[in-house]
Image (tube, rainbow, N blue to C red):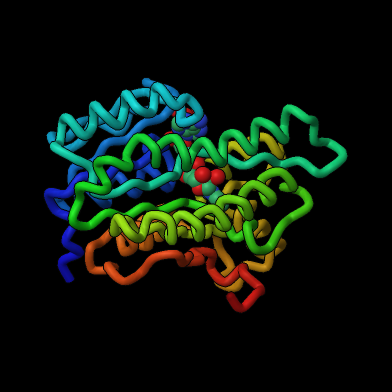
Amino acid sequence: MDLGLADRTYLVTGGSSGVGLATVRALLDEGANVATCGRDADRLKSIGTHERLFTAPCDVRDAAAVREFTGAAAHAFGGVDGLVNNAGQSRMKRFDETTEDDWRDELELKFAGVLNPLHAARPHLRASTAASVVNVNAVLAKQPEPRLITTSAARAGILNLSASLARELAPDAIRVNSVCLGLVDTGQWTRRHAAAGSGLPYEEWQAELAADRGVALGRLGRAEEVAYAILALLSPRASYITGTSIDVCGGVGRGIL
Ligand code: NDP
C-alpha cells in the first residue's frame, strides 16, 4: 500500500539515534523529505547525507532554537506536513531519590518537547492538506512504574495533553496521536546495560529484562517496529484517526485500553 508520504515533509525530533533514527530512515525510504534535530552535532552527522534530509543541532527545550530549526526546514522543503515529537529520555529514579531539580527537568523536557515543536510547526501544519502530529510516549503513561516515577508522571501528562490537542487542533484538520512504547532496543538500553555492569552479554541481559518486565513476546522491540506505527499515523491514509494512541510494547501492557 502506498502510504502517501512521498514528497511531503516531516519533522522528527531526536533523529540521531534509536526510534527517531529509524523513523527518519523509514520516511526517507518512502520518498518523504525529513528534517531532524538532536543536541549533539556529531551524532547528527553520523546519520549521513541525503538530498531529502535536513539536519541541524537543536535542543527541544529551547523554544527559539526550535523555531529557527523549524523555519529552516520549512524553507528548505516548502512546508511541513507532519511532526514526530520523539526527542527525550527517561529518568530511572524512585520517589526518595528524586530531587526538585529532577522533577522540574523531567517535566520541562517532556512538555517542552511537545509544545515547542508544535508551536513552531503549527502555521505550516495548518497549510498542509494532510497534517499529522505523533507524540512518542510510553506505556508508563497508563501503567506507572515507581522506579521511573518522574517519567511515568510526565508521560501521563503528555498522553492527556495529546488528547486535548487532538480536539483543539481538529478544526484546522491537524490530527494528533501517540505511540506508547514498552521496552525498545535503542541507545537508552545499551547505555543502561553498560552502567549495570552485570557481566552478562547484551542479548542475555535483554532477555532477562524482558522476562522481568513481563513482556508477552519475550524480547525488546526494535526501533523499526516503532517507526512503522509512526508512519502509519503520519500517513494521509490515517485521515480519520485522531486523539488515540497505539501501544508498541510486545504485550507488556496489562490494561484493556
Ligand atoms: P535514544 O537515546 O536512542 O535517542 C534519543 C534521541 O533524542 C537522540 O537523537 C538524542 O540526541 C535526542 N535528544 C535527547 N534529548 C534531546 C533534547 N533535549 N533536544 C533534542 N534532542 C534530544 O532514545 P530512544 O530512541 O530509545 O527514545 C526515543 C523516545 O522514546 C524518547 O522520548 C524516549 O523517552 C521514548 N521511549 C523509549 C523507550 C525505549 O525503551 N527505548 C521506552 C519508552 C519511551 P542528543 O542526545 O544528541 O540530543
